[in-house]
Image (cartoon, rainbow, N blue to C red; front, top):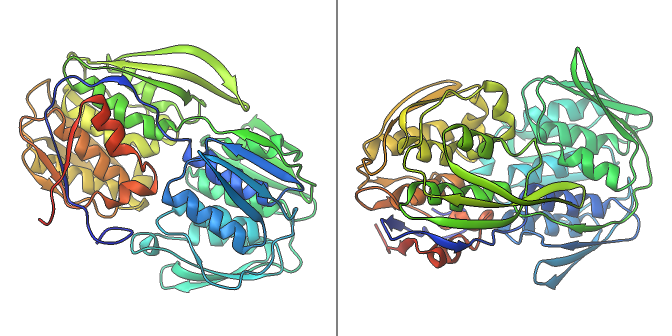
Length: 451
């Protein structure tokens, strides 16, 4: 079943060059945080370019349930009348976060230090994902969590009536865990400190500062130390959401492997904690350039131009780069299939607990399409076949995972035979315009009916 209803089988096949401009949606990470911080602020936060995928819509519904006034003005323009720090009301019904691990974990953090109770659930995929990585540190503030075996949804969070500040070292690189702790720290007295040994995407820190929180970041022998002073009055902001680099990854990577392609992807966020994929592609020899670099809303952005690159080379990625591109490894593995030599990816165990086990899903699907893949608990290696030599021809399982579905549809655009995906429905959670955008560039993507 699709994450949101009847399965939508899809296929892609080789086409002519991909050309034109790819206007990808707004950044999902920033969209979630804009709604949540807007809800915790005083006044009206106005947002332009919000990603209107189902994940973000579910977060908007959740903020309404906690008492904020959230309005869709059309065309990606939204407003949020916030309730202030610590002002969340107790929701009257279960909070359904659909497919979004980011949404549910950040919202849990935002409500965990208020004296309210909320119950969270999600779709079949989200309800399999572990929540203890967030509920364990939230317990240090005084919150309590009651969920299914293994710390899984549905789960009820009882917020701390008398929260205490926390000093917490994140055990594995995770922007979601870090952000949940920082959001919880907003309504705790004193200073909440988060230490990460490896830097992860820093949108939460940037946006907290933009909304008026007292927050500092220092690089020490312990790692990256983030200190937040609790109980600030956050001030509503006007936010322009940059385009999502994780969504941009798909037209960019497809252009690199489809002969004759030349695609421009404008206004892409290039936050250094998010841009690891583009750095990696250039290391592999990709014809990928940044045009018109600038800053918007405190985030670096540029226009990306990607051209067909027939001489890509396999490389060994530095493990420390993983946090800056964790969501892009599936589509990178597709590019690696068309490179010469081995692409080695290590330090990626986080991929095992995403919407699906992404290492297993990609390894299984790539093997079915004629590509050699080796994998272990926190690593995988793709042996590339070079331009034009990937057989394709198989049907793969998306496992209710939007990035798995889109990655294999990109594979089919350059493989010798069409590639089928059992269910493309989950794509709507993050990239609802993926099909028309890609077909507008020249890709051949078809809905195939029942399989």
